[in-house]
Image (cartoon, rainbow, N blue to C red; front, side, top):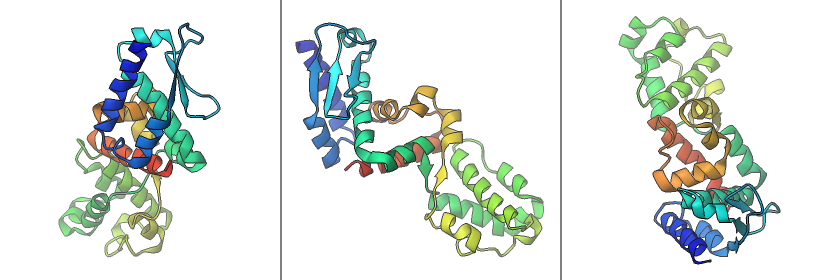
Length: 235
């Protein structure tokens, strides 16, 4: 049907203009998809990826009445990408695994070493609470992980002066980007449940609004990095 083809074409245009659609393997996946057009409604769904993981997506008449059909199509395509990434990609998405940004490590290290900050601060908790609220949710979570590592090694805040978190054993792997942490607490707080639980929904929103459904900027940025990791693993 012409209307189905127009919807798929529009979704493809959105994808081709986005950074993910410019990845060669993603473009190849899109071109390989078979769009199965159903004249009658067979499921309570507007569209559905093959349940066997094959490269075809069913399109049903209710899609033609959907207010945002391109989002529906991109959601199902996103699920195909996740399927191609295998178990590791699925685990990364489910746990929302990320690595700390160098800027977040530097923020914690500089505050831990700063004499003026130490003069005003008496605990790790106070150090974290002093972080700016807006746009620093991920930085605060990174600081919590680093603080916990120090606490678990029985290093009170008063004794933490001079600790090099990039070289010290319990924090070195994390601080040098060799160890993941989970964004689940933050994504759960700053994104709707549909996006948090469904990679396809998140992929569609990434393409259409640059993850506009995520309401905190640092979480938005970190989740993009996690999603790109998943997408790269599907190659």
